[in-house]
Length: 320
Ligand SMILES: Nc1nc2c(c(=O)[nH]1)N[C@H]1C(S)=C(S)[C@@H](COP(=O)(O)O)O[C@H]1N2
Ligand SMILES: [Mo]
Image (cartoon, rainbow, N blue to C red; front, top):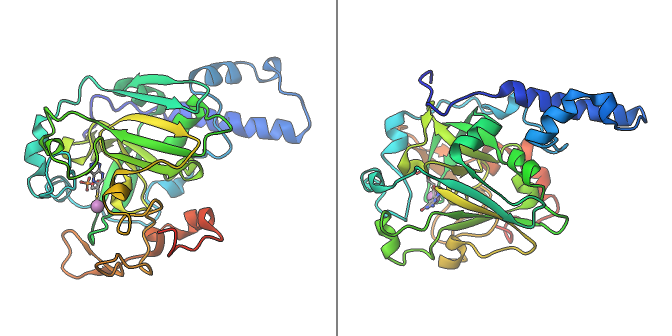
């Protein structure tokens, strides 16, 4: 965990400044004072111009985000030799070899659609702007296996605060790379390319929703979604799109690749739920890679305290 990539520049102090700024703004409004740049001085000027004021929803300072379940990460070899990545192959054990073909530099991410500020940023700029926080999160695949991955990256809400979704934005779509020259699985119609996934906007704002740029203190390996990959730890693994090039803010719920491929097997919400069986097998247990005995799968993958409120009043067997 101590070998850091060349990209890895922590900007914790910037993040802390933003949090202070937000708190200060709250205190000031509670006191009934007017927000004036004279009053706030350089704190406002410095931060709001670079990364935007952190919205009240985007509080990433909590220690509870790093490893709330106190999980022990799988080894580098376990994580990088068994991968789901249909752009290369459906054979999980050879993805890592085929993924060597992928060129991940240069790479840009474009955020567009229902936003006030459309932007395109390269990976280096993203890391400079948002830093690299450590997050140890479990990944639970629909197929019944799971592993624990030590990521570095930033909460997606930081990016949302930068682009500022319009009032009409209700959903967020993630589009993965389309490049059949390097991704030989894309020469087949195993899925509708490019790989697309989506979240409701409030799910995207949750500080657990994460953009990974690093793993084990190095750049994310190609087979795990380099150079930029979504991580939504309370949802089945397929929601966590790899190799993202575009993020689109939308008014309507979009189609997703897995939902198009098999609607009854891959719902839009895809919250990890041992109570709701997959049409062809139970989801009650999982096989943690590297462990002999199966373990019980937890509702919301163990994050019920943090995320259950997002689904209040919804029937989770209908909205699977
Ligand atoms: N672009 C893309 N992203 C993807 C996939 C894929 O095939 N293509 N597979 C998904 C599935 S089903 C899982 S379980 C996880 C696996 O991530 P890992 O290989 O890092 O464990 O990636 C998800 N993201
Ligand atoms: Mo999966």
